[in-house]
Image (spheres, rainbow, N blue to C red):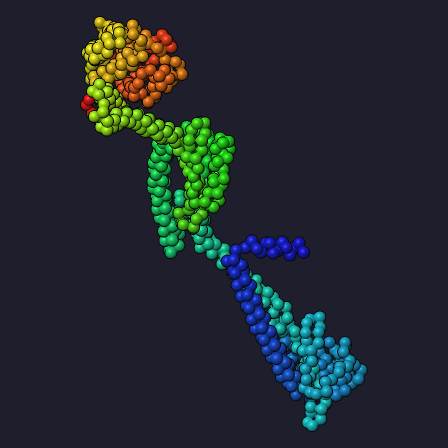
Length: 626
């Protein structure tokens, strides 16, 4: 059983070509061996028939010669003749026997002895033979020397039958009569065919199969992507041309591969550069949600380290975000949803998450991966909120003076005849004041809008003494009416600063105006400008002895429409002055600071850059001279 299995396994290891060659050799060898066996049998039968005809001819010859000798009992002469005949045909005739009509041996050669009867020589081993009923006849029997054919021919003298002559044909007389010869020749033909087949296979392997195997191995390696494969076997003829063509094909494929790799590498570099410069976070995932590619923006949004590639995205997302993203991400990764979007609030940040599948280019909807895009909408949300608040505040601030103006004008219009002059004048004065308030509000809104539009202003060397003195002249009358001392403190060695004259003058005017507004009569407001410890900066400060600002209000003092008077319920204003100041100072590459205590006064100060001949202002937006 094991031998059969081993044989089957051994045979299964052969290739189909080898099996076909073996089957063809087996069939050819069987056909040739069968034909040889048939041909040798036919020749053997023909040789036997020839032996029989030869034996009959010899028997007739001996019968005709021996008839008169036997009739006259001349046995010595018969013996001499027979011995001479056998001597001349020893290779073909084994023995000769003469018998009477009853089968008793009269004479035999070469094994004979003398009988006392008539002194006739008789066989020493055979005394009697069984005669066939019909003559002439043949009979075969097995002897140590092989198969012997006995030919029986009647001996007739006149019309009387004297007996029978028996001729034994030698089995070694003809080699083709041997039965072993047929077997040997058949086996030899069978073996010869296999030898020729094996030699042909070896010749085929050495001359044709070897280069073909080299080509097959080369094609297999090229199919695996090894385009550096070459067949170095030299072979003439068509196979040599095939090898040359194969090497040329491999060389071109290698060249195309190198070119494609360069193009792919360049495109990959472009893609990675493009992804790296995108402000939104981006992650490329495989179908198992493992990270394949992540851009710096995504690392920055979630605070990840650089070694996140290969990890599962769900293991890295914050807990709050994972609960929102896991279900849509799973649906997209299983190709249930074409796209998914969700918003997540995480650590006071508003994130927009867009999930999209990456499909195979063949159009068979085979999912190759998932793209996760994260947008930080915190600033947008803040801007929208600020915009809504700005619109609400502006609407409220506009509605109040407009309502006052409308009510007073309607009163004068409808009841003007019934009102005295003093009342009319009072109504018109109030409407005029509300109109001025409305004008200031509109101008402040326009100024703030122009400052926040991103326009570039023209900066040049400015002597701070001039805008400071102009500001003092503008507000001196107001300070006198409120009984407030307005003073300046300007250093004598004050250098020029790099800035915009009109914008700086507006900053000084707003700060001084606010200081006068919140300072009680008898107080003091000082506008100062001095060098700092850094010789490249000049500090400008507005100090008052007013009501001061609480720490809670200091954190919001520069917000639009935030007014301290909303809490103290004293004076009115647009709530945009300090916001305008903050924007102007930032455009001068500086920052407004505040130092204040409730009931003790406030100080607003900022450091502006001193002018140098090599100083360049780093702005590249469209210029607009003010």
